[in-house]
Image (cartoon, rainbow over all chains, first blue to last red):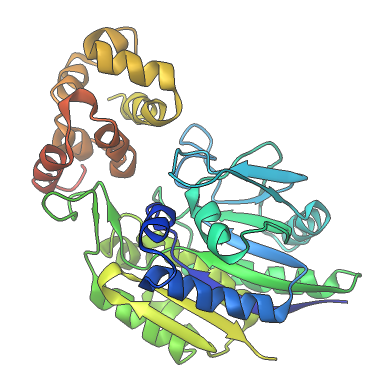
Length: 274
Length: 89
């Protein structure tokens, strides 16, 4: 039977691959990704559920899903001209289809994507965590960028549904979960600093989110992470929903490791129970 | 208000190389046939991102314009202007 064996959360700034190529494996970004990758390698997952907020590249405002599951043989990216290698990643189509069907049966109206590419928000994490792209993914998209956003509680419930779907999968499989995103980040909006493209308008919120995760205070996190609170932390603050969905999959566990970079409004984390 | 049309222009600035090059060459001509009001056209050509933001254009998408220096926008002018914007109506 399939089981959830670990979960991870990372940011995905598009500048990371170039930064690490320039500064080498000793830089802080490289070291933090390496630490998460070490945990990921240790649990030897057969598949990786990826909760991600597309940055209006895979989907657009003409037809925007709140939740969508990608079901294909492979997916390519990045499709947004991020300066990094191009990849083709296997998708676990059977598991993705099972998750989607289970979700629909549980009342989650999950949109379907079968012919799609993904942007840096998936490819930057995979570039660092699974550079050989050997682990098939199940991409689950959550609208975190174009308000109105889905509720935190609904995203957590989505995660719990994914856990149930995995438990019902009738094959031996070790499944890990990856959440991609920041807690406080403004891109192109009024809260950016002078002379910058992006900024961290609300490091206090990022710190609070990280502290709740550190202590597994999930109910408090869900209570506090309203749409308006997340968006006050930046117009990309809804990316927290990916972490919340990931926490729904694994239940109220404390992380094995969680390292905040408060000044950047994000954190790196790994949850293991082996 | 054709917010969607402007969001789409920003999207195409990133994803449609021919369109991006056309905007670089002759911004007014590149958007001449697109369904914008006179005010929107004027705001876009002037790089008035605060005005566009206040009317609901997605700021993440407008950031694409700066990335390619379209409509006269640089990181500096963009940040100066958007920081002065009020909340969208």
